Image (tube, rainbow, N blue to C red):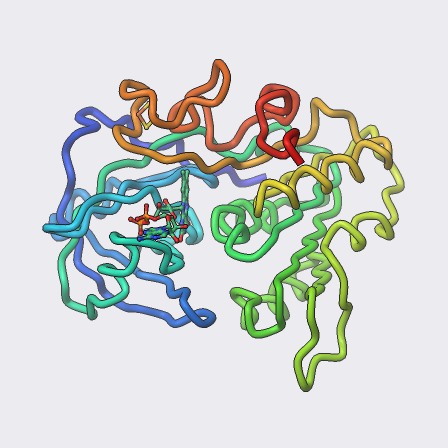
Length: 285
Ligand SMILES: Cc1cc2nc3c(=O)[nH]c(=O)nc-3n(C[C@H](O)[C@H](O)[C@H](O)COP(=O)(O)OP(=O)(O)OC[C@H]3O[C@@H](n4cnc5c(N)ncnc54)[C@H](O)[C@@H]3O)c2cc1C
Ligand code: FES
């Protein structure tokens, strides 16, 4: 299996490198992918990341936000980030146009356990914008040869909220079993209606002892996904989640992102489920 080059060692984690917005791809309402190119050609050439890692994007005069890198790790032409307008920084970003310059610190954080996926069937379960940090892993897993199956179960509230729809046919052609669902149908939708965990409940899992599950989405979705996976016999040691917490320093110093003993910025965002399950908010439901 091809594995992305190890991530660049962040020699100065405080340094924000100027990057130009080369292209903006509208994805779904309120979400767009910003393709960034570092202004320094050497930085662009040397920038590598692992699937699941994130950058801190700085909009001058506004602030920084943690945003996952959503592109193919082997495509070095640009560094894509898929951004949902949520608050100050992401709104400011959405007002910028191609040609504008922002700052990029990173890459930071842990990555999806692609080595552990070797020889295993992999089930990727994503909800909404949770597909963004998983897309680099899908790209990597599609490059495996005769090394287990790959299934993507992806759900959104409505069909018009499904990200990257233009890629699904290509992923299917490359051997990925892509199954989609929405909470609420819209005119023209003839696919599944229901939460994404129902897709997992129904998915044949012929060798649960050799299956790895990767999931990202709303915490409650991940929680029920994991419960379903456990019922299907997937071992908790093979279940990974990607978590979001408020970020500030991104290097484990400020404590903003602490969850139990873990700092989501440096121990996460990708963590084995059993390391974080006691601390998830979903326990309060
Ligand atoms: C590791 C990691 C990876 C991430 N990857 C991505 C990604 O790929 N794409 C992405 O879009 N996001 C991602 N996020 C989430 C993103 O970092 C947060 O949404 C971030 O807070 C956005 O910054 P902001 O300044 O735009 O929003 P903030 O101002 O921080 O607002 C965040 C939240 O507060 C609410 N809020 C803000 N202002 C107000 C207000 N005045 N009144 C009421 N509510 C308000 C917003 O609705 C929003 O829910 C990631 C987070 C982490 C930790
Ligand atoms: S963001 Fe500062 S410790 Fe994680």
